[in-house]
Amino acid sequence: MLLKAARNFFLFTTATGLLLLSGCSEAPKTEPWKDSFSQGVEFTFTDQDPLAGKVAGPVNLKIAKSPTGFQTYLVYWSSRPSEAGRAALVGRREIGSFTANPLLTLPPGTDKVGDYLLLYISDGTDSNTVYTGKFARVADVSPESAANEQPQDPQEQGVMVPGDEGQGPAQGAVQNLQSNSGKIFFDYDQSTLKEEDKAKLDQAYSGRTDLGAVELKVVGHCDERGSNAYNLALGLRRAQTVKNYLVQVVGLSAKNIETYSCGEEQPFVDQPTEEAWAQNRRAVTLAEDRQPYNCAAIAQQ
Image 1: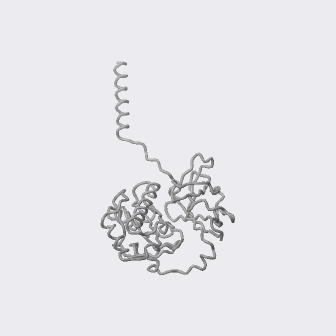
Image 2 (image 1 turned 30 degrees about the horizontal axis):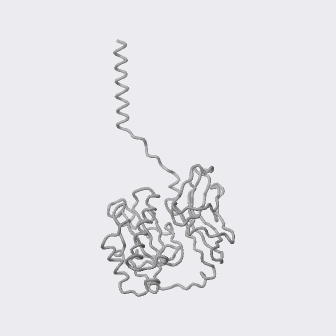
Image 3 (image 1 turned 180 degrees about the vertical axis):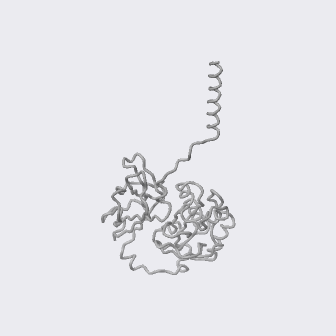
């Protein structure tokens, strides 16, 4: 009797364990800090040093909710708007002490180590450091030259490449160029130009004789699927693909084209459907105005 009861208990517990294992899986781990950097965050830097190769001025962060589980903001130099170009540490600020801008201030005469600043968060010991996906362009332009610079008509700048409709973000003040039918679109998880999009770029510059003087921004976008970090990298690959074609085939100058990525942060159609995602996987080409492009400054760009 005791042997039979023990055997039945073993069979019951074993079956129950198998049932639990087959029916349940570990709950996906969430990262609460991402909510703080999902929408409406602005990370910017304005150079106030008139010397070439030197920068100075405020590093500002506009954020509605401080990230939870972390203690410190870290700012790094970078050669590109991604972790791949990260260089020296610029400075750090305790999250709890940050109540008003600036987040950091670069003193006069600071060497310009990279073209971008990257924003990280840390647990305080730097054993857990995370890139937030936010970057700021470092434009080494003197205040005098910026004040004297006159606005130019996009056509005079050689801008003919398709772009989104509407006005650009407040920081950057770019002017969009052509209709929705002229955008460059990509297949899911791809950064390869299709033949019809190559034709759009060819047509945009057909017959021009001043290709070397054309200055552009190319901004890559993704749909909402995938992690933020992956989509930022994918958006940059899409922008770089357009730039490579414009340089290698059309004949524009590489030094006159800046590439940016907004990842999934700036959907053109904010809906979870296949049709919307197809419109969000795009590259947008804008007039270069020598100001950083801020993905969070305007929605549905």
